Length: 99
Image (cartoon, rainbow, N blue to C red):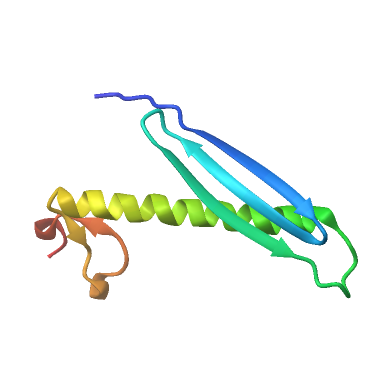
């Protein structure tokens, strides 16, 4: 079965007084997820706004990715699969497939 989805990701950045705030928003069509990140410039550092943008944006996307992964973890557990035992490394699978 082939399935095609389009999820849209938007990123909003606001910089003020040496601090950049970012919000990453994922629209799946059935749910909206948001992640937040921030960056602050050390007053002794040169003002390079692009660096603050990159740091805040990456932190917001990492926060969003973590929330999405935690939701997938909950759904995997609800479906009867668990995480792979730590001795075999990270990952997921049905218990009988990883023993």
